Amino acid sequence: MLMLRTMRNLESGIWNGGHGFQIPNSRFLIAAVFVAVRVLVSAQETGKTVADGVYTDAQAARGSTAYEAACAGCHRGDLGGATGPALRDQRFARQFAGKDLGALFTKIATTMPRNAPASLGDNVYLDVVAHVLKENGFPAGPQELAADGLDQIRVLPGRPKPPPPIGDFSYVEVVGCLTPGAQHTWLLTRAGAPSVPPAAKAAASQAASASRPLGTQTFHLVDAVAYSPDDHKGQKMFVRGLLIRLPDEQRITISTFETVSPTCNE
Image (cartoon, rainbow, N blue to C red; front, side):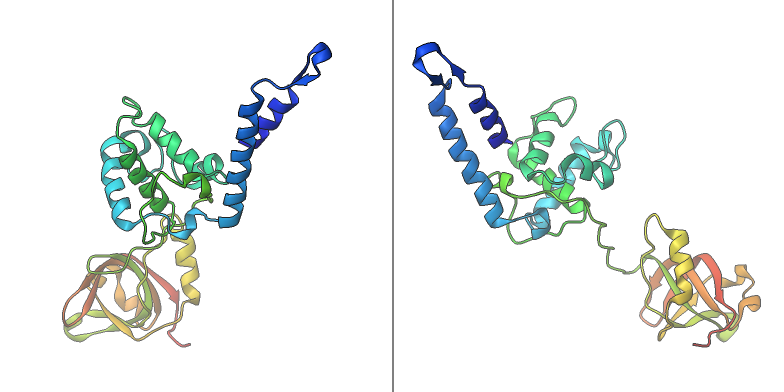
């Protein structure tokens, strides 16, 4: 961009009678061209993007706290946008993809928060940028994001965030065989590994479950009796619910209970 502006300025030089062609502030323009060329060459040499781990997890955690306090009221906690524009997905890509990271930093640092722009300090704004990058699916790295070199890091369209690790009380989905257990309990046997349901594709995820392979895990379906389990005994079932991990068994409290196949033969 600086190169283009400089070339336009060069083209705006004037012919001054017998004194020949003159370029206003020619020394400044020559220096600007030199700087622009160096920046462009450096950026091409490094080829660095926001996918290369340009911030740390600790920095993004600080940024999350600052964002929640100063930015979430306008942009929502999930960056989805409210009175302020979204900072993820298509809006993020349309506004920032292809630009250098300095453009994102400058936008945030000079306009946010709305009632007190440029009031948080550069280090806090760098932390917020790190948080925005993490929420757009870009990985952390070993070095914190610093003001130096922002113009040499290219912004890419956002990516889906990696799913959180599955643990106790995770909301999961799983496919397995409905089997009666001891003392009138019901189990999901030969089940595959549980997974976190995709945020906006629940129906597609459920439809795709028919092709999921069975596995070796067993889950105690805590409230299966409410779903007429006798009608589904021996069937391949899709179950979604809250995972509870105990020392001696895994349990699921059911929110979705659907037949995938009338048999469990594979």
